[in-house]
Length: 113
Length: 110
Image (cartoon, rainbow over all chains, first blue to last red):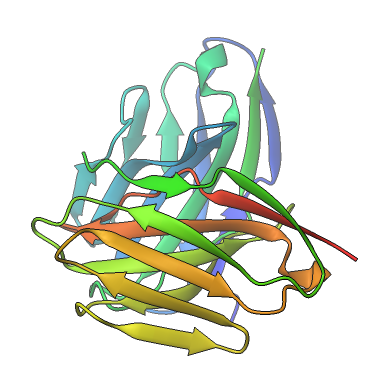
């Protein structure tokens, strides 16, 4: 099993550009989520999905879009990149039950200049 | 959004020392409490998931307890080793969301 795969691992964008961070899991997990990690802020939830076709906002959703057309994939779209979106982004997945731990991807380090 | 507090923010101990950290969270609408271990340049890995008041979990030298009535959990490491150096995150689960604390960064010196 590959687990949770995130691509790309590194990306540099110019302010105003758009891009999509990819996340795929092969564990048949219903639940998927995106977090960003900033120094001193810990992991903050951006968006999450409890199943295909269902998404919802987390703590810091502004400037990001998500969709969930399949169980396996949960892409995160930056609509118009801003320097404040410079961060490390983690995708995580789990069974839809609070008793199961999350499996995290290896992260995408994004710099917006 | 839940207010999750972890203390201390960082901890430096000598090899062989035992240590513990605290996670505080709102006690209302409790579903579960997760603990994760996060090594530098890696991804967070699940340590424990606890759901019941009074739960105790153990994995090797690491153990955790849960008090849902007062809203806190303790993580204990017995006889710390350099390989225990990591950031330890707690996260209460509430309405389909895991909200993470900022973590306790542990450094164990040989």
